[in-house]
Image (cartoon, rainbow, N blue to C red; front, top):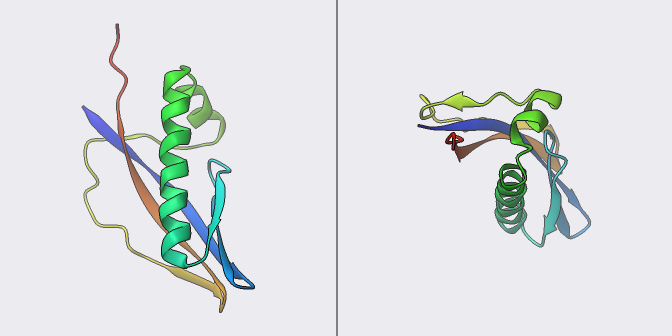
Length: 103
């Protein structure tokens, strides 16, 4: 069975670039546009989570950082954006994750 986690993505425009940061993982990147920054952050988060899985640290990391793994599929679409100020905002991000299979 697969599951998901809900992560917080924060974006801020600084000069002519957008910074993007996943608060729970500490993963960050930037882009020339908001779309580019979000896409890069999604890729970085995916790689971060895959690496945690590959080295067997996902469960420990989630526990230490209070990240809740939810089983199944998300029951509703999470699309809320909360403005912080004109140049920044935060939004939830649902990341699908395959569950561990015992060997």
